[in-house]
Image (tube, rainbow, N blue to C red; front, side, top):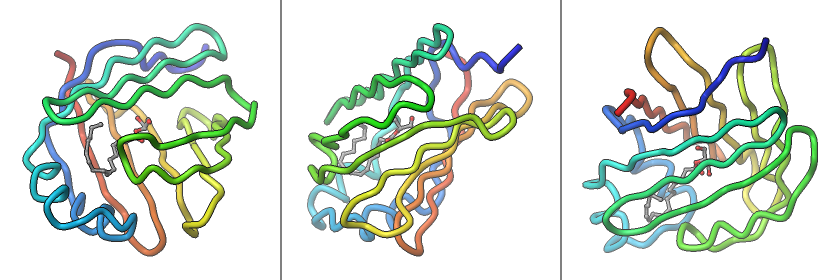
Length: 134
Ligand code: VL7
């Protein structure tokens, strides 16, 4: 049985989000607002199909994908760059590789105790987020 990430999750910590945003080329004014946010994630996992809706008072981002199927990601409202993305299981971790203009771009989700963890990577920057069930 795979891990089930389904649920509603609230951000409780956000380490080096600033470095990650700088690596993505997000402008100063947007970063100032973005780093104050406490986003919520709603995840729906149905077999190989995932729905991950990240919401905040400023911007929302919806991602839907199937495990092992490459898709075009537009990152609309984030850095707005297009990339080719693919999400796979690595043991109990959900790993996304985002191939495009930015090197080493991707993210990994996993569960630790009652918490949802997310590592966001871009170039030489790693942002670490932790979420608790709402
Ligand atoms: C999504 C933000 C910084 C722009 C606004 C910040 C709004 C709320 O990709 C992500 O999650 C994956 C895994 O769960 C699913 O898509 C993280 C937030 C990354 C990057 C860009 C700052 C402006 C944050 C949407």
